Amino acid sequence: MNNLLYIAPQDSYPYTDGGKVGIFFPLKEFAKNFNVYYAFLTNNIKEDITTKYNKYNIKAVPFELNLIDNYLYYPKTLFSNLSFKFSKFYNKNFLDKLSELVERENIEIIWICHAQMAKYAIELKKQYPHLKIFLREHNIEYKLVKQYIKSTSNIIIKIFAFIEYCKTKKYEIALWNKFDKVFFISDDDINTAKKYNKNIDNTNLIYDGMELINIDKNIEVENNSFIFTGSLNSFQNENNLKYFIKNIWIPFVKEIPEAKFYITGNEENFLMSKLEMTKFEFKQYNIINLGFVNNIKNTILSKQFVVSPTLYGSGIRLKVLESLSLKKVVFVTDIDYTMVNCFKDMENIVHYSNANDFLQKYKMIKLNSELYSKISNNGYNLIINHLNWNEYIKRAESQMNV
Picture 1 (cartoon, rainbow, N blue to C red):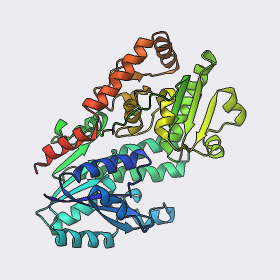
Picture 2 (cartoon, helix red, strand yellow):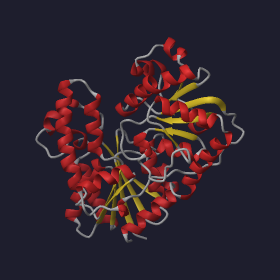
Picture 3 (tube, one colour):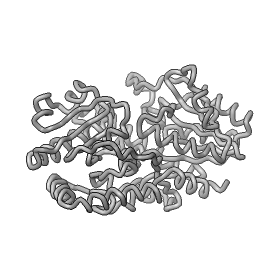
Picture 4 (cartoon, rainbow, N blue to C red):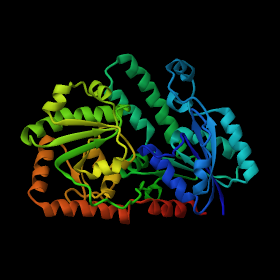
């Protein structure tokens, strides 16, 4: 088998969020057909950090590096071609460790997760020209920076963010010509990339997937219940949810007072602070914080509908795929709807653009139980037939020519 070095910005097991899921499951699948070395950054190397990967035939190569944002470091990056957010992931000692690994283990292929880690592959390719190097874009990073600029009203932050945006965009677009192949995980992202690189086509598109599990059919589903899962630590989730509650949920619950909206992944005081709401308002608008739940899949299964209120984001929302894999009817925004071209409104997903759209489609589904079953079953079949990790690896390996 070929020897593959898989480089990522974080320890991905346990896979507790979408970012870790998108790293771990392809890693696990690659280990079935390659000798895989998994090199990653971590703030703290724990005793079991390597042994936990052994059962998947993955050889873990952790490297300790402080990844906590320190904005005092920002001035040092002003004259670098790497943005602040990219610079913190690059360390010469880690590169030296990877170089020794490539030589010692006769590595032939490098798979990079996230553009922030791309410089390692580029530098290693200079030392070892025989290497085949591949980049999997989790997001188009410069799009996120641009969205952040729109989300802040602080003029100083806007200026710094704009500089970051310009540097990130120039660097990231240039990366796409430096790899043997670059893979994007959503239609929206690849359509963006095609505008800047004439060599990119649909062979560069590989949708992320979702692992299928046995669904517990004994879990009781609460009628008229909606759920959002995700931490508000990210500016994307914070702004997405604030907009949804103010502009979609509050008008909706005034029309449908029996409806309830559940939120997971946040401590209550933190959640109220981020949403700028009080306990009274939570009760008034039937918003219920579940905090950190032990079994997120069973929690989702107990609700009738899932909401993905994305206004800021790039890539693919794995929470949407997870909900489809649990046979849930998922309400998505424009940006979510365009991430996968096999999404069909009211066929396998529910696409809403405004509060009235959300309300009317809810009413259609509630009046027709067969429509709910059709949408949920069709969404589940999307995961079975297209959006799974087996399909992901088949497409990746066919494009890698190994």
